Length: 103
Length: 158
Image 1 (cartoon, rainbow over the protein chains, first blue to last red):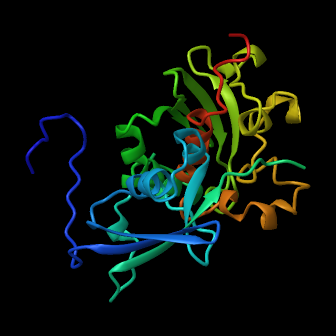
Image 2: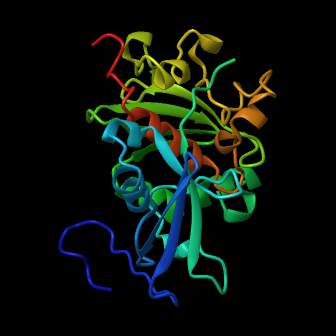
């Protein structure tokens, strides 16, 4: 495979979904958007927090995406296409705050 | 040492260190593998001010048992002095507490030493618990998030 000119690792993504319908819920509201399967989790998070819910960058940094109905928080790097289940081209997330670990 | 003689915990650790997940984080500049001397691994984590904070991970019985992460001075190969620990006022201050367990670990649910006596964390912070499938990479991701969040305020002595 060719070396990318920018020096960063090359990410090659082949997916059966042309686009993935993403829903992100926060504070009783849900925003929706379609992303390419090669979009990273971090990009989706930033879009949801900043554009979808109009958070400040500081508040956005204190929130993460969590797969709806689970306690799974995907890392920021993976492509969202790797998170969809077979037969689906959709994902649902909750935007949750990062909590202090105390006690 | 031949492959057959490497104990299973060390073998899995080495596989995780060669995995795409680990290499992806390293390539992104989030962390750097400094040394492996099983059962310890030393990894540097990059903070948002560019400072590298080293951690020595105790990995006995990996990945079945969680690892313990001790802030570590990579060049001196010694525990990180308290005045060089990351500082903050909220989440960072709580996690990087040199007074906790004599500075032997981070105050996090994913840490082998800290989870002891904190059973309530299993319900309160399920996303921060040790995950034997994701292993060290999950712990490193949690550290990276703390070192790059808004609460991070450099080093204690700065």
